[in-house]
Length: 265
Length: 264
Image (cartoon, chains in turn blue, cyan):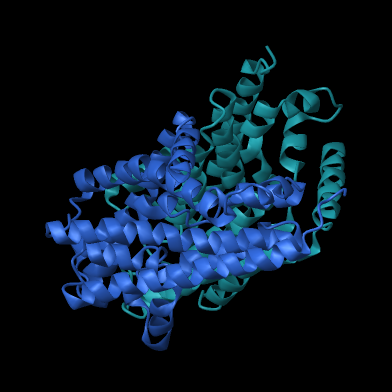
């Protein structure tokens, strides 16, 4: 119950900035249009690149724009609060609360993601549908699997962002690590270019890394590229990374609390 | 000139401040280089599936990419902080700045100056340098290339300042400006021939980013415009740069005059 309350408060907190939301949807859509034309040119020159057709490619672009904020691809989200509280020393208060830190921030981040999905996710998708006639999930099963995959994407992304924010325990400032991690996320999530286009070993590596669960896996499920056992495997891939990374969050937090020296005390 | 000196002093102050977290300082520079570096790797992967993109080969696209990226990096390093003006308004820092004997625009641009774009600058310069080896140079082409980089930086300067002024009217719509600044930068990475004619017209006359690299690069590459636009446009970048800049400064002045503080 507590975690639901945390999530709803986070949802409401992010919904305060209406103008920011509208301008964000506008910006995502502008980028969606730019990339759509770039991909259309690519698939016109090579109509079967990466096993996608032109409509798949354009759909992929708009899904990427819709997911950008929902999974907080650039980093940030509620884990920024954590890093800031470590820097200021307020984290000491959080640590003697009778609630687990990871669960608290995860709930809060899911609330944030829900808000961003309904606005920054839904907005560009509708525009993509109207302007570029993007594909919709082929079956109810695909749609349901996409929803599950999306939640898992947020959890995996949260765990990585939590680990990044935790570096503040040692470095006091997460910004450098955050930018590095954002760079990897953009590239290896398939946000910049679908991972299906990555050649040879680079493609194999990229598809095995946790970032693949951000955009590539949910998008492929939406496009119906995973069916039957394959669909189950795709979701299991995300679950596995979520479990491993959340465990790492707990581990890092245990290490960190052992060394915390509250500033000024 | 005095303003430029003050700008330098404020910038130096912020570099020293950022150095207080040395690990972050280094990682920020490396990370930003990495982002743009991977950006180019993306382009390169794209070309492993293609012979040309809308008629342009990899090294031609690299020339477009490198020149635009270089112009953006210069503008962003010099005045990127202007994006944060909404925060200054919200926290009341703009009022403090107004009481100081240094032009407001200089203070806003130099504030929180960061060298994080050094990475991007280096990466863009390398790509541009590589692409330049494929250009068939003549004295006039060298001149056009230099004027392209200067005008490109001026254009982005104008776009950053101009669109940031929206925040004088609404303080939390920072992202709106990104569509034009970073959106403009992204558009210029591709040959404009991938877009429909209407988009090209918009990018020439409304948000004139086509002058950042597209028109001058057509001249450098000795190509005729796929849309059949007049050749004179290939030399018009300085005009576009100065016009954008003047427009942006006018908008800035209107914004500052409109500003009535948040205090009451």
